[in-house]
Image 1 (tube, rainbow, N blue to C red):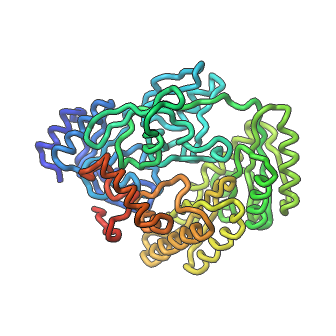
Image 2 (cartoon, rainbow, N blue to C red):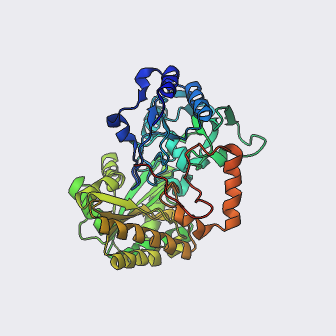
Image 3 (cartoon, rainbow, N blue to C red):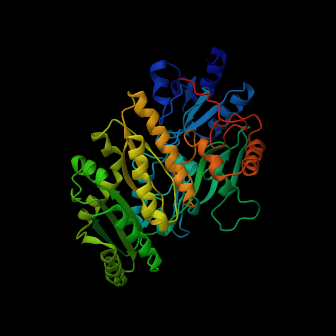
Length: 468
């Protein structure tokens, strides 16, 4: 509970109407899209980078933990205020500040939704390549915090490949400019350090993005398989042939049925797996690439390949994929999404292992993921009101991550570590590795107030500090 005097100071910075303290209001800020919950003591909604800096300085003066928050769509507990304190909600910093077509740059604030960036660029014939499936509701600040990817990351890369500069409020309240519109700025690559740091090193208040021309032509295919293993083999074979599609997305039968029940995207209900494969680029090259991919898929065991004949059909196919996470609510009220990544050649084996883990723990798992870069998203479906089932879900999730590491992969591809995957960090990092990261955290945040308890496990094991 924050003292009335502190709340008055917060109100003086952002205005009384932009401070939330009632249980009814702050209840909505106790969770994100993960399984973790914790009540903040107050929520402030600044309207400028200057106000963010003043809030952080206030938090330092009073030793208050603070957590930056965008739309709350984080999938690993990264925006949960684990020690209470102050949530700094950046939803009012939602302006597109500049669209610089000649230099292929864009400047935005962190509260801008990813899809709004795409809509703003479309009339110019441009796009911003990272496109997470949550783009309708996820903000650019959150995309930076988690180094988000999306279906097109196979060909175009993830957020870190498209962010050139940042304005950041450091944990002591200082505001710094990192990177810029020009390439290869001198000094340490602090932009690269901050992208993916999950708000533990500071709060981003402005972003300089790399934008690019829309491709001349796009061809979208739906490929149907009788087994997950065959679909996984096709993914590996396509890349091995030297063909790099714009997207390679996979869904299994559990997800297909949920989507068709909710969206009617046109996926066949009897398919064990489907791939959405998209090629883009010069118009003259599309038919050749599509034909090559079709032949590879048929050799791997595809039963049919269909091509979207219009933008409307393409949008329908993608509506199903982008709505997959929401669609599983028709099966169970809750899900935990794993986010492990494995080498593409290991996909057939790891998909079989995920199924075995589901059977072992008696939980239902649906698979929908960025197959092209081996980024798995097994959705473990459950009812949170059943504590026994919830325990089995957590055990299955950790075992899936362990299997990914054993296959030569890692514990997260784009959803971050947050609170959820702290126990998985020692699976891929040695004690010396983790200590090096702690030294970075301490250099930027010696007081440990910036989004505490995230990314790095406690030195002597994880001790829960969640305040519910």
